[in-house]
Length: 270
Image (cartoon, rainbow, N blue to C red):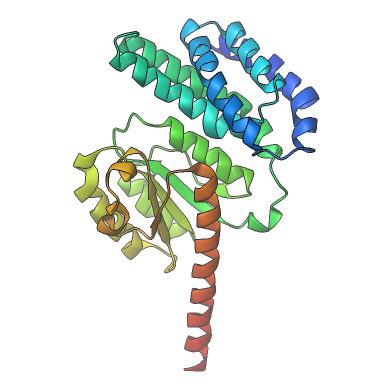
């Protein structure tokens, strides 16, 4: 998508959301049961709009979806991921080709970016979490970036400081954990061939980390296939869903900080 197309899609959409959608979000629960059914029905509408490659059509579809009562949170957590899965289902059935999947997936990512500020700002007031930091990364050469992108926006919505983007090289990750008190590393695992490497990477990051209470969370497509993946890789916990992952991460980091505080207190008395 060129800059003109991006501007054409994001500017009117952002203005409309600020004027009509955000005020409604402040007065309604974002996870009403009816929202879930609507999200499933609108996933196909959104997926077809992305395949049309017309920015205006995508903009109109999103505004129509939100106007029917779908919350912005449900759009992020359900409708957009479901649309992405439809691309792959249609590809498997030879209804679309790989180029279609690539272009439509890119359009979904552009949509997430365009709505990011509104999504983050419409979240709860969580200033107390502003000192929580996380690196959320994909496995090397991963093609599954949409889920991690949505996850990062959800963490930001609850006040987390997200370090960098989703593509990291190991040397850069080592420098980051050596120089900053990183609370959490979240890794999206999408390739079985990377298991051995990731196990070694996690151990190395723990060893080099400035934070002795560094936590590692794993998620992604491979987690659904391998129930023991978390333990095998040496991670602390695992989760597949963005909203649950943020809550689990918050609880785990808080517990880790309390443990480290007790250890520090014991060291003082020795």
